[in-house]
Length: 187
Image 1 (cartoon, rainbow, N blue to C red):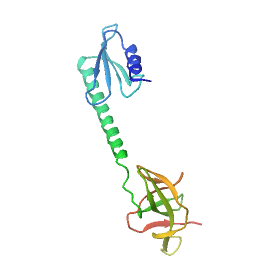
Image 2 (cartoon, one colour):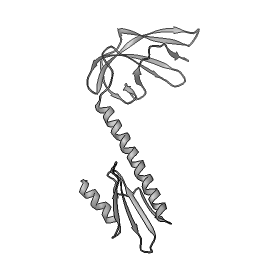
Image 3 (cartoon, helix red, strand yellow):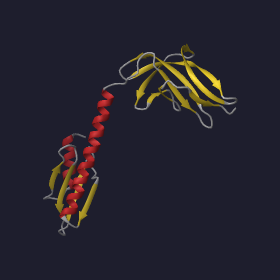
């Protein structure tokens, strides 16, 4: 749907005589009007939505003004967060060749997998699984550290996301902080 089509679909829902108010720092729009029985009303839209986010009748002009102001402030906050997220994505990631990634995962036990970054692109990394040096605390748990360069798996190209590198459906690897990582095994 084009911007013109969206605007037309919104305008059709507003009664004749409605005044369109557009926010200065977001894409939010509010139509203020007086309904057939003389009550003060407003309905607001944001983004590319055709259905209104709200359509409310108010007891006073002050109450309507408060809601419109709050709605515009909320829409501006959302627009700022979206712009920040987009800028962060456009900036790429900070992983480089040689970085060690750790994926700690499991159910009723903590498994630890290590990966080394072997190639970097703008939005992805190629990683290879590496060995971990495991020490026990006297049983079925202990600490684990990576063994850089000790590859045990084939290279995998993975996209870098907001929370790290998604290895598969149950593992997301993030940059290792340099401290031993806890592991446990109950089998």
